[in-house]
Each structure stands twice: as C-alpha cells, then as structure tokens.
Length: 189
Image (cartoon, rainbow, N blue to C red):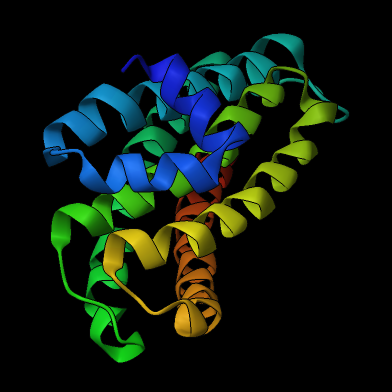
C-alpha cells in the first residue's frame, strides 16, 4: 500500500483501517523508513521553510539555525516514536492487553499520522498552530488502534489511551525543550 493511501485510510476510515494494519506484517525499518520518516521529514521541511524562508510574526529564523533545528526535530521525533512504542508495549498488560513490540510501533506510528500531516501547515507559520488539531485527532486514532493491535479490552481503551497521551505529552515537552534550548543558544551565540 502506498504511503498516500495509508495516510488517507488511517485519517478518513480509521475504524476499518486499524484491523487491516493489525493483520499486516511489518518491521521497524518499514514502519519508520517507509512511513514515519517521510512524513516527519516533510513536516520538518515545512517548518524550516515557514520559519527561515517565509518568516512569521517575529521575522525569520536564520537559515543555518532553521536547518539545524529541522534536522534535530526530525531525529528527536524518530526517537520519540520508538519511545512511545516502548511505552505502549510496556503498558499493555496493565490494561488487559498483550505485549507485542511490532504492534506497539504500528500504533505509535499510525496514530501520529494526522499530527505529521498537519505539520505541513507550518510552511505558513500562522497556520502552524492548526497542527494541534492533527494531534488531537491522533488521540482518537490511538483510542481506536489500541484494542485491535494491543488486544486491549474496549472497556479499558480510554484509560490506556489517557496514560499513553500523558506520556506522549511529556515526550513532546522534552523534545520541544531540547529543540528550543538549542535554538535559543544558537540565536544568542
């Protein structure tokens, strides 16, 4: 299945797409290299263009600083996907699910799809805030994906989702702080 078809299906018909995903064989290389990395990369490029070429309310980010921040963001988001998958997998038994590292990685990757797609809006900095809506929709995708992929009972899916979301927020704050600190230090130096 092409990346565009998967993006379309997971965003527009998640209830029917999750069971398809659950039955597919995948490797971490195919999930990251063939799906997540292109979407994260496109979002990082859009952010770079928006910040360093288009510019926002506070002007433009210097070219080399914007490029460095885009690369760092890309790397940290790839790492965050793996960490989120580890969390999803570790929490599975707590919520009546079954551990499966590949299925956990699928949940992490595909539930983040709308956030990465909405990240393309960062090409126009004023629209970048709409990426938050993609993240919120990703929570819904996570909720739908946990039962079929991690074999969690539907009655425990809300709690499972909430705990994973809290962990994802913490991960996001950490990666944002790292990128922001390096960006601030670069602008000061």
